[in-house]
Image (tube, rainbow, N blue to C red; front, side):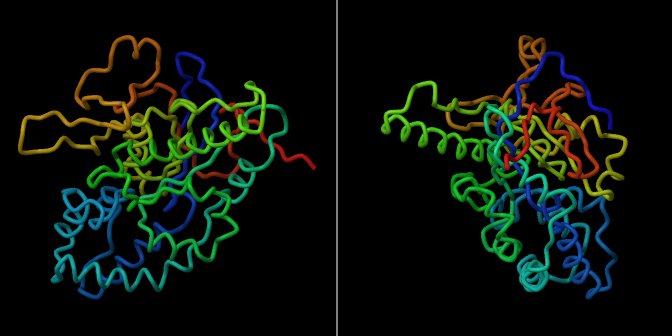
Length: 332
């Protein structure tokens, strides 16, 4: 997809926030494998992308028990003679068997090692964080054999789907996990600034905290893209070919975060609120005209189609660092 130029110049990217399943690792295919094994055991067909696309990127029922679009969508389609608890027990057993075989997807290792290498000039370093809907147990199964890769992420900047700081029901496509990932980075910046001050460092040696518009979210799922856009961040969408086929005629909507993945609560007339720290916005309010004119998204809202804040890439190989103002190169 062609890259859309935003109406106004954007600041250089200072933080890259990564999803994991299907973006860094081939674990989405393993999810599908485990699900298809169960389906075949009961004479059902393979899970189609038309259904998988609705499940991908969302937290599991153990994290969002009230999410009507998670397990309910799958079980309504599958019609298995199993309760949801029985299905999860079998699914968990298969995942324990197969998740330890995950492998990084093309371009991932070079990208992460390049971003975490020493900058080639005086530009600010690029911080990285992980923001995955996978809960702690599954994260360990998928990554324990890939420590050289995942230790590139500072431990405080690894945010998992069962992180207690994310309220139940606020997983992707809500923006909370990406805003929390940014918060962990800024907490680290504040701590280092305080240490510099206590060591007698100069004021100009302090690093400025990072703004959402200085963040680049890397995602493979449609709900994940919406989460990044609602966080007021720029987004790279790297979809599985099967997912891309499902959304080939709606790519502009996906990149804007406007596919309707995030729904208002039912049962009352109260407008849903997005609240992260001091930011509270009604999700059905109009984007202020000033924000539209400036081209800057409103935090909590999706973007506008063709606004230049998101693009699709076929893979993470040959990433265009210069396009995002990222200075790379490792000094010898």
